[in-house]
Length: 246
Image (tube, rainbow, N blue to C red; front, side, top):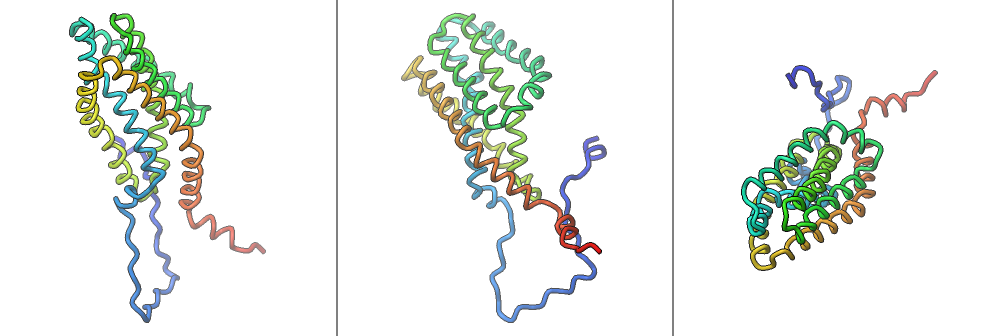
């Protein structure tokens, strides 16, 4: 259905019949390296965005890895954990209808900073949580943060990728989530065991630093996106502009 209804957005340059073949150079020249996965892995603007997304993913993974351990330590059973998770799922189902309109008029870096700060606040509150009501309140905060982050994350990922390399950029971007699924329980379990409730303050502090990172990285990222869009404009428009009119 998608292949049938959604048109292709990648426009490949067609060779023109009146263009003469390129002359063979007299001396051997070094062939330039073709764009590929290395382009994404050396794109600093993109990698900064991927790093900030990785922090957000690590924060989000706390709900399924470390939070159940904290709830059990507070004397709350599996049913309480199920209630917290169910509340988050219900909020996502309802809230996703309103999030796009809510964030549409705001800069993407500001939205990501606000969403990451909400995640930091929600998990930081768990440092003083010992009852189900506190966990439920914190779940509302971090779920709103997760919902706000999803649309701009997807849009920025698409904006930063050159049209011919979208799949490679997507592959690098989405590696952040399995990486976070490995890091969050590995370091989080050790942190919770040895630091106790201080773990949640550290998580909140890391989230606030990531929110600040979004605010600092946003303006240069937008300039980078504008340059990519300028470079991706069809040659036909620039050629037409150069043709003199009678």
